Amino acid sequence: MTDVQAEPLAAPGQVNAKIFPFPLNAWYVAAWDHEVTSKKPLARTVAGQPMALYRTADGRPVALADACWHRLAPLSMGKLVGRDGIQCPYHGLQYNSAGRCTKMPAQETVNPSALVTSYPVEQRYRYVWVWPGDPLLADPASIPDMHQMDSPEWAGDGLTIEAPCNYQLVLDNLMDLTHEEFVHHSSIGQEELSESDFTTRREADGSVTVTRWIRDVTPPPFWLKNIRDRFPGFEGRVDRWQIIHYYAPSTICIDVGVAPTGTGAPEGDRSQGVNGYVMNTITPETERSSHYFWAFMRNYRLDSQLITTQLREGVHGVFGEDEAMLAAQQRAIDANPGKEFYSLNIDAGGMWVRRILDEMLRAEGRA
Picture 1 (cartoon, one colour):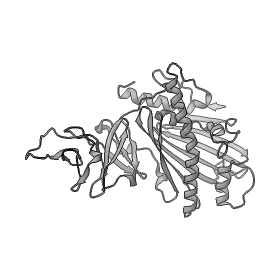
Picture 2 (cartoon, rainbow, N blue to C red; picture 1 turned 90 degrees about the vertical axis):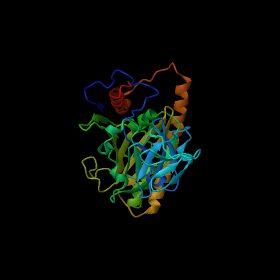
Picture 3 (cartoon, rainbow, N blue to C red; picture 1 turned 30 degrees about the horizontal axis):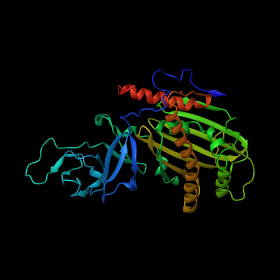
């Protein structure tokens, strides 16, 4: 049984698009915080816009358009100069962190029109976020809540997947976890997943929550390992939960875990189990490629670097199976331009995501 709000999911417009456009007036993760340095620029394309990322001498992250005003040479191939500047690698023009040219070679005056776009930047939750749209609309308060990433009550780590597919395919994948039964059958999948009830709800703050409990089951290998990390020698059946939280445009935090059956986890007492958060934020690079930043955070055995490393590598292997499937799906989409998408009950969460993105695109006049 699926409990969804009475309002129809399929709005007019492009909610069923196979190549979904990306909103520009939104915060996207451009990089992990450690990737952006004051030693050399980092090149990264966010929402179709090539950017040069670096830090000023006082550690502030900067994102400039990655094309010199003069001849469009990539600034990311240049070097950092002064306390907040960058120098074009081709003819030596220098820009400050606001994107204004401050020095031109072989002339004393600087053309006042010489500037490149400087994007709004924020550092939060171990990531550097950028706003590729209208800078006047860039409100840092709208950055999705990913506090588990740097809270002392949680421990974990993650990696980046360069996914060769439209970002919406990743969101579809994360909003419906029944695929675990078929794609991840050797680690986190189990047949009871697609048999269990779930609810889908759009919250008052605009986010979407998909809740699924799988009760009284044998833990799959990944979860048996985790619960034994906290309770060595554990044997028995468990109640398992997957609670998906979507935040526009492309962040999905998934509350996951298991607890011994009958210890009260469905009623709110998780003290006898293990709890993790799968943190996912997907940044469209182009129409057919995405930067997929993820991490697995846990709230037990916080001091164990061994568990942190094992979980990161284990999830990396699981997500590698997703990456292969998504790449194959993108190839099939491109090979079948005349075919359409159809939706099942299990797509309720993904359809809400599509509808919200469609609303954002309409607000930008792009739907």
